[in-house]
Image 1 (cartoon, one colour):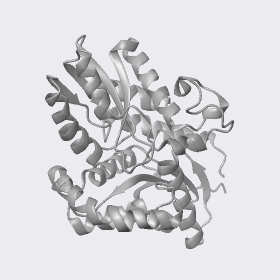
Image 2: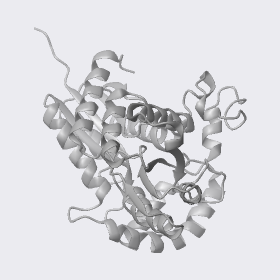
Image 3: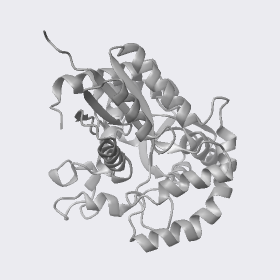
Image 4: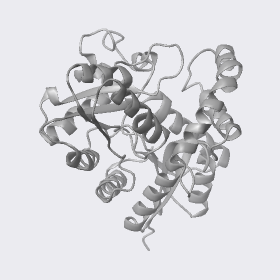
Length: 346
């Protein structure tokens, strides 16, 4: 008798407060910012910075922003993450799929418990981040492995890995952008920011990242896991798919926090620069986010929109994340099937 292994997937996103309140935001930020993979300062400095400064000020500023975008069903990021998991489950009906948040709820622990109780033998860990970064992919996987150890569960584990140029991701991404472009529209790829120290750390040679002109545009062993390079690869792949010349698109980084040096240019600076160059019609897409949340619905569609108009811009379109776009769900499920069929469990 042939025994067929039961397959399961844990989709992991960053996280969100449970409610758009100061207390809930403070609880979420505490867990998020005290993670050494997010703020990699020495322990005492991180504690002082987060508990002594950020948690005293930021929750009161951020909670009202969440209120602006909150949906009837709850936090947009959680709602869209649920829809992605549910839509994928309808196609992959023989695979058990759960979604979880690295910080907040539903927790990675709860997601793993559900998969374990379902009798899953082969487990795909799928951080929902196309581009590799210490503060996203790495911390999600580390925490998942810690929870697996605590649960005493040892399934056959497969990791999705980064997929910044996978056609199953690029094609639906380009398809979501195309309806918003015309000959007079400039496309801005706005990625989540990352401290420069994080990208320099993955440079195996210690001679490439932030040391060679155009380092992110050059593919080499040194930047195989470089977030900045992955973002550039996605931008180039999408622009080629859309047939855009190099003067029709730009790249920037948003969502900075703290005094450290971050990847540049910032989205705010780039928007101002583009308007000064004469751009009046701008479309912004945020490829690092697979589901809409505070960074897209408020930071871009409200905050950056106001800056664009203040500088003299006329028409701004903030393109929705892929969310549960049917083309993306088809691509995502194909990636999952491919991973299960091609990967050797770790």
